[in-house]
Image 1 (cartoon, rainbow, N blue to C red):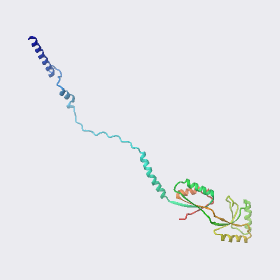
Image 2 (tube, rainbow, N blue to C red):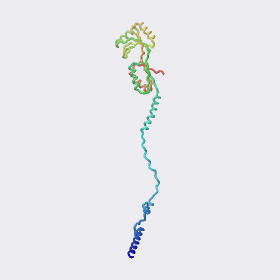
Image 3 (spheres, one colour):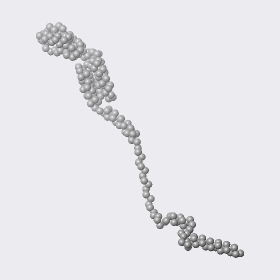
Image 4 (cartoon, rainbow, N blue to C red):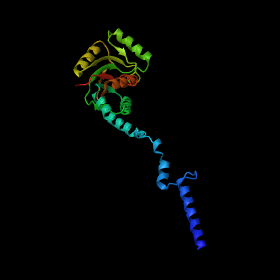
Length: 238
């Protein structure tokens, strides 16, 4: 019985010791289980309620401007075309052009781009009758012939200076109809002029009508003034 009694006493003291440790009677912090541990960890006296702040705004997304610019350009193109169509239009006619001048004018109109319209017509009937003395071959020959004509009383004349087959010819008059030219030729013969003759002008001559924006057409005509020397510039028929 003695060993059993000793074991019970030892077990009792062990339980008392465990109880003392759990209650903190011996100065230890004591162990109060999982609820108290969670309470100590939370420290409720340190908690403060804070109002929720709005979430930071998302950074702006970059939008590519290229498609917008393309759309603006696409929308502006019809507007520019409409402006060109509404620009003041002008018209000019070039008459008496030779083949080289026709080619030059046609090429420049083609390079000028859209907005210009060119209409070409060739005359079949003579536009005038020219009373003249054919080319004398040189300035000296022409001056000698002029002096002779003046002695015969012919004062209305001039010497053609432009290069070509008629250079140094002596012009005695240009008439709109053949009858008037023949009357003048007869009057010259009465004065003793025997070398005068009549030539038709304008048959097969080219007449070109150009229409386009006023400013552009004025610039074109100015640029071609030297190349189209000798050609007539007329108003267009409305």
